[in-house]
Length: 220
View: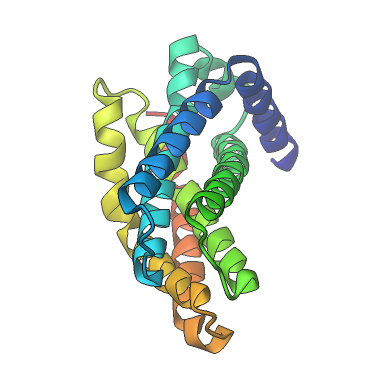
């Protein structure tokens, strides 16, 4: 299963390098949004709560735009049937999850890097900030991968994706925003342990449920 999953991830990665559909669209989106925020603020400084909220809003919409096509592209190219015949459902899900996680890590790194440069954000506990971002990234990728599979055959894919994913991601986003606020302020691990436990539990439940349900979605 792992070998097949890595092969699927490699295929998607090579396809993205050739087309650069997601990367180009996301880079422009991120640059425009963060620039607008900076120009709107001028010399004003945002609180830690506002910074963390804006960061996760940008991350949510950026990943929604970037990850939604992971199964749609298979349907458009007519390669979904080949995947169904050559790989089992769990290998397909794992491969897509690995690719989405890798893409989300790149997206988030660029968002944080650009946000810090443009707004001058000072993160006082960078280690816990990175931990929060990493756990949130995995949770986002897991939810958006299964949602992408659900909407791949729908007619209104662009509309359905954020509508379906936001309610499922709301608990994760709230926990990540709270934890990010505390890490920006320099809080120790004990102060965010509840949010970290929530994020880990949420991610485990989502990945487990997705593994169990994906075969039904994929073979429908």
